[in-house]
Amino acid sequence: MSGAATEYGQDCYNGVDMAVQEINAAGGVTVKGGKYTFKLAKLDDRADPTLAKNNAIRFVSQNKAIAVFNPVATTIGALMAIPEQNFIIAAFSGVHTIMDKGHPMIINPVPNFVAYAKNFSIVVRDKGWRSYKK
Image 1 (cartoon, rainbow, N blue to C red):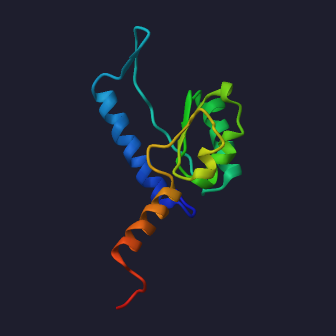
Image 2: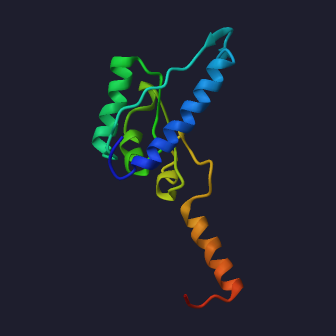
Image 3: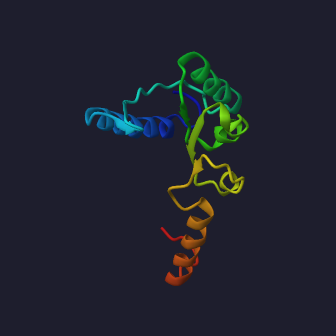
């Protein structure tokens, strides 16, 4: 992985990889009586929206992926432009402008960044902090 979100993307990949290994070790998941395991693969989009969209389409057309996961805010918008019926796009974001678009496959497991800033300013005010001193 490369680009502006290298570390973040790798951390997310590691977390998903851990979950996939645990699920597969437990025998996978059962859907409508069938047992399924997961295969995790990654492509480097260098945090570039066009490359991310092309990678997603490539996963579906060449690898027959049924789901594409991408957690990087700079690339999610491009993925949201792909018709939902083509495959499942799973993404999460704390960026409110992405969440406000109302895409059904974008989830937000954490408060958006605006909430963090608002709450931080309340804490600062309540503590009486007015300036930074070394």
